[in-house]
Image (cartoon, rainbow, N blue to C red; front, side, top):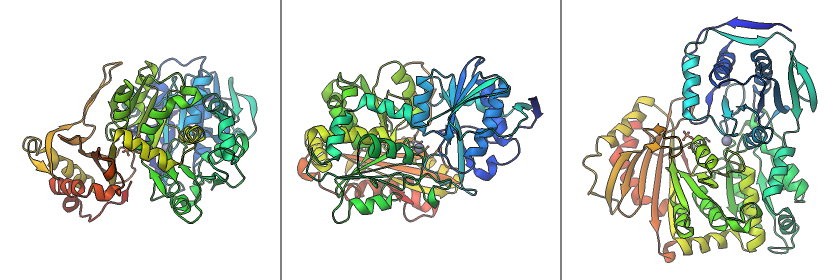
Length: 548
Ligand code: G1P
Ligand code: ZN
C-alpha cells in the first residue's frame, strides 16, 4: 500500500466553533475538504508516532465515508493504532471514555450533535485530546491556522476497510481495532451507579408498585447504549427506549432533547397515565432532558439537584470537589455550592472549558443550560450518565421528580430561567443587536429595568485559573442588583446565518411564588431585554424560534 502525498489548497472557514467544525454535508463532500481538516489536525497536535487514535461518530449521513478517509490518513500519518467503534459508531461520551481508558493520544469525533442529518443537512468533526475532552482553544486555533496554509495531505491508497466486524486487522502497518461501541461505556456506568437499586426501582419494588419510565433516543446514537443499559442491564421492559434504532438522517427529526423537539416524549409525559420519569438524549448522546410526570426539570436545576444529592450515588459518595457551570447557565448550582462549602466556577459556553478544571481536581460536576450535564468520569457532557444519576437518586429518595424539585426550591430558592433562540437571522443584524446593548454599557448601570436596578454590564471574559489562558467576548451581560441577569450571545455551532441566544434569569426566594410558569415569571425581563436591545426590530422577527 502506497502512502500518497496529495496536493491541495486551503479552504476558507475551517475554524472550529463551540464544538468542532460543523458544516453542511455538501461542504464536507467537496474534494479534499475533510482531508484538509484532518491533516491540519494531525499537523497541529504534536508527536503521536507510536500512539493510538480513537475514531467514531454519531452515525449520521457521511459518517461512514469520513471514517474510511480518517483511517487511511491515520495510517499514512504514522499512528500506530486506531480504535474505531463498530460500524463507525461512538457516542461522544463513549468516545471520551475510550480515549481515557486506553490511553489514546486523542480522538476524532464525527458529529454535528443535535443538528439535523442527511445529504442536505449537517456534518461535523472535532478533535479531542488525551484527557478525553475537546481540544482547548490553543489547539483549535493552531488547527485553524494550519488549514489556511495546507499544501498537501497524506493518505493510503487502498480499498475501503470493514469496520462492521469486531476484531483487529492491519492497515499499512497500523493496527485497527474495531471495538464494541457500548461495552466500555456500560462498564464505566456500572462503576458509578447502584445498578441493583435502579433495577429494583424499574421492576416496581421501590418508588411505587408501578414505577415506569420512557427514554427517547430520537433515532440517534444513544439507542444502542440505552437499550443495552436500561433495558438490558437494568431490566426495564422492552419498549422503554423509544426511537432506539439509529438512522443516518435521524428519522428526519431534530434530535435535540428539549420541549420543542422531543415532543413525542413530552406528549407522553404530559398525557394520561404518564410515566413517572422521562428522558431523552441528542444526536451524539451528550445532551439530556429530564422530565417527571407532567413536570419539566430545567438543565440548570438538574445540575443543582445532582450536586445537592451527589453523595447518595456510589461514584460520588465520598463527596465532590467542586462544581462548574457555563456563564449563561442559571446560578441555581451556585447556591448549592455555597451551602455545601464547594468552589463554583463560571466558564464560557462550551464543554472545552471544563476540562482543565476537572484535570486539576477542582470540580467533579459541571453543566450547561443547553441540556448538558456531566462529571469527571469522562471529559464530555454525558446524556445517559445524567439519566442514570437521576434514576439512582429516585431509587434512593423514593420520591417523585416533582417532589424532589419542590423540596430543592424550598431549601435553595428558585432561579426562574429561560433561553430564547432567534435562529437563522441575518449575521449583520445579529451583530447590531449585541452592539446596540454594548453601546449602552455606560448608561444602563443604576437605571431600572423590569422593576430591578441594573448593577453592571459587561462582555464576559474568562481567565482559566489553571493555565491562565484568556477567552474574551463570551456574551453581553446586563447584571442586576438582585442577581437577575439578561444575557445576549451569538451561537458558535450553527451552519447558516446567525443565531441569537437571549438568556433570562430571575431569582425567587419565596416558596409561595415557586409554582409559576417560567415564561410568566420572566415576562417583564423578556420585555425589557427586547426594549434595550431592539432585538425584534433589528432582526425583523416577532418571536423566538425556540424557547427552552
Ligand atoms: C451550543 C450550546 C452550548 C453547547 C454547544 C455544544 O453552543 O449553547 O452550551 O456547549 O452547543 O453542544 P452555541 O450554539 O450556543 O455556541
Ligand atoms: Zn450533542
